[in-house]
Image 1 (cartoon, helix red, strand yellow):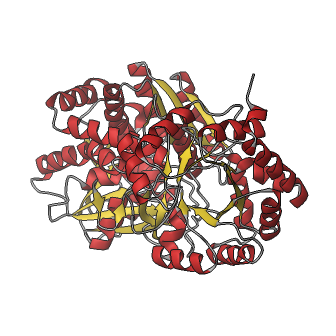
Image 2: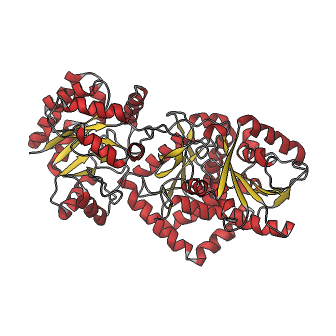
Image 3: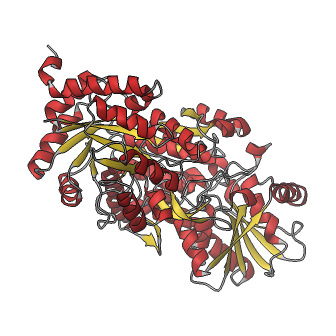
Length: 362
Length: 238
């Protein structure tokens, strides 16, 4: 089982351990099976629209050279499809006809509903009742794609409870169901699995950046909720002399103001009190409104390889508007947090992961 | 003799409720230390945990509750909680402080067999567990093995899980330790049927629901459960 220093692990009820073992075996087999890579790659191209472009944002940041990795142009409108496609292919190899997922902003729910429609899998998505209101268009998209969306009325009615409910559903239906977890969080092997499926972002961006500038960026920047687009971007530059910067929502800074603890099956950095009870996150962005974060990010923070900043709701909204007016691109509120910190970086040559499009936030 | 374990959530009334449960015939009390995000629990225990946390039942207060309960009952007391609390409090410190407050063991719902083997606790096995994992859990468990009767969370079900029989027979081949069945057992009929297979029965969500009606109601429920498991023949379905 892969861990990240003191982070990661499997803090789940016994019922799930055999399913996690099974998933880990299937994933290890898939990793060394060229036909898995080929199947994923072919679908990413023909169905997903990869490779996504790299766009120079000249008017957004006139005193720097800022490039946007356009995951907003991926099918379904965000980077979430990268992971959903790969896991759906794994689920088919596991012979699981039913998929359960959690969603916050709805982007992962839409990506999951999309691949389930594509592969003929039953799809159940748990979504906080509050998020269903603030991300209404995505709820309708999921319905159109044939998914059942179950509102979660517990607690803060956001991503945190939706994730708990999806895990409980999985516990009850584990024989027939694959849990298509949307971020690099949760029990092993999910953090590794999601990272590797999102690593295509960093791989493509690295090659595209080299082609455009003849060198690597000085900094690579991405927003961090659970952290899957960030870990996918960072994966392309971990061994390079490239500064890695994650930007959290100020009200959900599980890395910036969190402590070590256990949530949703893994030890990581999270918003919790001194007794280990999890605290509420608060963000305008439903996708970042989560008190935990992937264990690899906690490790990268501790080791100093990546640094993590925050952006407030207002700063994200300001960056959202500015990108729309200067570049003709409506970003999702989540990557608007990353955009909000770009102008203050010392780096002049900057790569930003534009993880999703903003239609859902209108 | 078949054993009856009753689950109660730590709170102001808990010592008195535990006393009533023991008066009704409970052989063991599990004391829930509430966690904010309890993945193994259904709606009843989740709501009880939410209320307990709102009342300030953090780890220290739960240990005090344990100590007060110990002052009133002689049966084994076992805190049941989640790894997050032990992570924050320190595993060794938690085990030591619980023991000195009167605990006889621990149950950690999300710390599966193989993790932290040095922490003495009652291990859980589930219908999905492989024989290897049942053997591992039996090797490390503290006195008895907790059989989760269903793939699912805690809470009442319409009927006893059909998966229990298979789980019991697999576990019997792998261990001589007592087997207690829990999750989804709420009525005397279900308790009786579970006791036909296992050595003990755990009732949680139903006990919490009835405990809201007070000590007398809880004592009556426990008595009916105890009678049912001691005289299984009376409850066998025709």
